[in-house]
Structure formats: structure tokens, C-alpha cells
Image 1 (cartoon, rainbow, N blue to C red):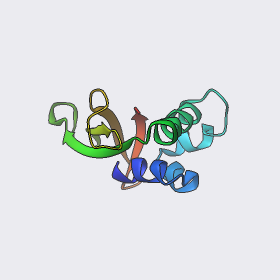
Image 2 (image 1 turned 180 degrees about the vertical axis):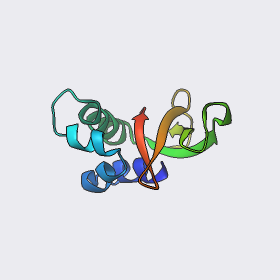
Image 3 (image 1 turned 90 degrees about the horizontal axis):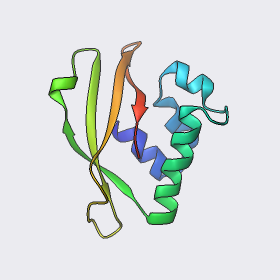
Length: 104
């Protein structure tokens, strides 16, 4: 999950794409798909507002050995919080944690 936001902030689309599930990777180039929207929205937050993301907590009530829900703080350039922490959900796919739902 940290890599997902890190590669978004670094504008490394290929590495960011690798953090997604295989199904999402396949649809990423389709205009209107979730990954297409996520990348463009996330990059807009980074480039227009200088946002960066910091790990906040794991939601243990909505996590198990195959799925996990994690929250990240969305921070302004001065370190202040911009809105509420945002969730990201990962699933274990081929022994690797992959993003299947995220927010920016």
C-alpha cells in the first residue's frame, strides 16, 4: 500500500500499475476504468495541491488473512491533514498484496 502511494507521488505509472490486481492492470488504459480514474485523480492531488500520503492505521475489523483495509493520511505540503484519512484495500494475489480499491 505504501508503494502504491509512493509511485503515484513519484509519477512512476508502470511501478504504480504493478501494485494493482491483475484484473485492474488489464483495464488501466481504458478511459473511464477505475485505475484510469485513480491515476488521474491521484496525480491531480499531487501536482495541483502538493499532497502526499502517510500510513495511518490498519482496520482490523475489515481485514483478514486474505484481505486488508488500511488508512492513509492525506497531507498538505505543510504537513496538515487534508480531509479525512483515505482507505485502500488490498487482496492477497499470487502471494503478493495487490490493491483492488483505493481513494485519494
